[in-house]
Length: 308
Image (tube, rainbow, N blue to C red; front, side, top):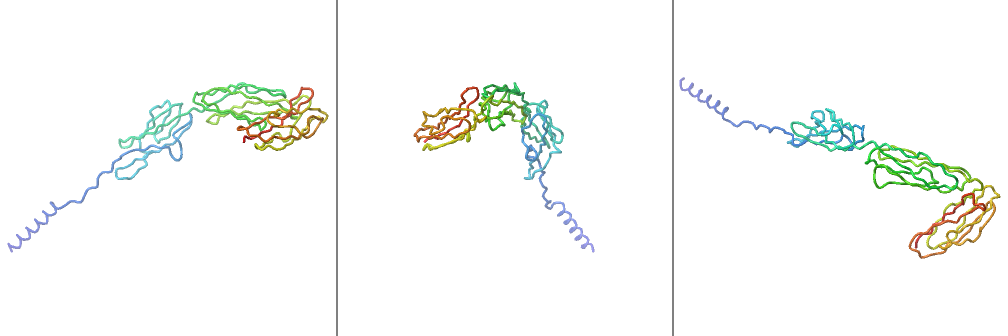
């Protein structure tokens, strides 16, 4: 009996010893944050206009290869609150023109995004309007914007007055324009819209009188030719119908000769020929319908001859 008790005791000791000194299960390494990335949420840009807001997101890259959205867990901060502020949830508000670094810190790891704030460009023009008689004329417009970084352009909205101006430098400036003579039977108007890079606009309005007496219109107003030349014609529409006129050939030196329609009273047709040429540049000019009094603008038929 004594021998059995001793054997059992030894076996128990062996089992206890194995449990204490055997291999332990492995411990998983702690997951840490390697980096924090800050980006505009969705498809937003890091550039804002003053007064705009933009939601940012913060994503933590973890040591185990995973990523974690920490937008609402990170601590947000702006490097220049006078330029842009940021809320505890990452909502940026543009305050003034300039640059601010918006950062998010999570578990001691910081990420940042450069945010550029541009001004909401306001614009005014001076003078706001101009009026011309039927002979047209020239003028200039001053454009004032509220920041030296504001870009703008000017474009006419009227088909009869094609005009585009894009200054090389931002900031306030001016542009000049020339209003063509009005040989139609009606007064007309045009608007030049000045628009900034932030879609703010100001309008310069032009009005032009109709001819005081006779009106001379050419139809079509323009014909283009290749270097091989050819023949062309246009209708003269005179209003009133008893208005007399003479044709002025401003393209004789470029090989344009009038075949018929040298002068007339009322409506008529002018026919002409364009000689072939070997010039290396395009050329253009006008056949003009001039009244006898000189008190009204000439009608103009535009001829374009392409280079060889």
